[in-house]
Length: 263
Image (cartoon, rainbow, N blue to C red; front, side):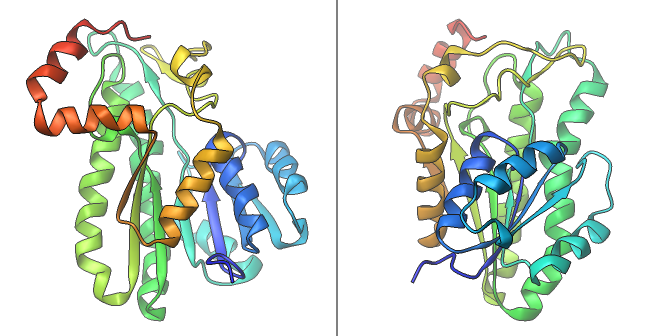
């Protein structure tokens, strides 16, 4: 029997990329899904592509301006309490520290960090009371290694690691699992949608994304890590090298990052 069969799984950022791929894979495993993002039309498209779409609900929400408790109550009205929350929604960045406005930094943190915390706090009491549940947080390799032009994005992802490491240490006795997922380059629109220094849209496909791992393979590896109860999982062997360099040869990594041609 699949680990996800009949589980209620809520995925944010489910209208494209990793979130969409995770939804399709979870539906194949027999999960009951709640899909969230801003664009309802795209969520409906993903729902229609899922196996057994009658077991998939669409909940459009802007996670930069929402009431987490009310939104969670609505999410749980479809199939019952949330068994697995996947905090996947987020936005990347392309802009130097010198040029990036404080409004852009706050926008990034509102979606990439505070929305995750708010939804986690909304579903957590029920998970603790039931003595079961899993929180899956889509971080990034940048959650370990800060790179040029992504200071706000890296900071938000680093913050996720600190928050969820602390949470894991608090709730493990209540059988609530916390899994941090750190993908490298995945073939999604993340660079196209990245926010620029003045709040505009980057609108360019980075080479790393263009030649990255297919979202379906990324989703397969994520759900395998979730099923195994892993606390953290790096997705992408090449990118994992940077994490090891950060730990064992930080000077070498710093030298490389200072001279990297980053877009």
